[in-house]
Amino acid sequence: MKHPHHMPIGLSLVFTLIMGIQGCNTPRLAVAGQSCAVEEWRADEFFTQDILPGMESNLRKQRLYFVVGSAEADFNDQSEWLLAMDSVLIPMRVRFEESGAWQWSGSRNFYQPVREGVMSMDEVLPKTSALVLSEAAYLIQRDANKCTAMALPGVRHVGTVAMP
Image 1 (cartoon, rainbow, N blue to C red):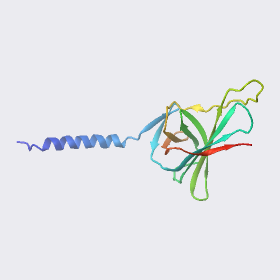
Image 2: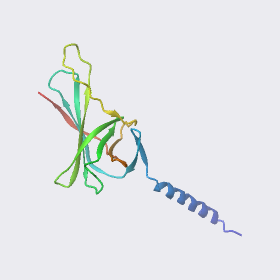
Image 3: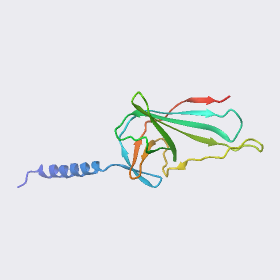
């Protein structure tokens, strides 16, 4: 006769094994038709600043994006870096600071309709990410054969600068 506790222990073991196997799968994020592995990484800072133009035009504002984080061995400044936010991909530049941190920066222009005779710039729109990210943002590192997505903390807006 079997002990009455064998079945729950056996089921518990199977459940734990299944959860362990599922936990080994790297989460993935589909970005612009490419599957990116989601990796754990913590940015020290993620903030934006808006710049208002000094003259009337169809350019309503330019938003600057900044991400600062600790150095990681596999970060590569030769990779393509993108910020996936608000359903768009924003190209990011990266540089290694003397302090030992990495800093990424990028910008996005926002436009508005204007009346006839007002200066109108060519509109440069970011590529779509195929994601609907209402609050989330990801820093994307793309190489020829690898794509990595790193979740960013909530964005902090540091203010607006109005050009003279």
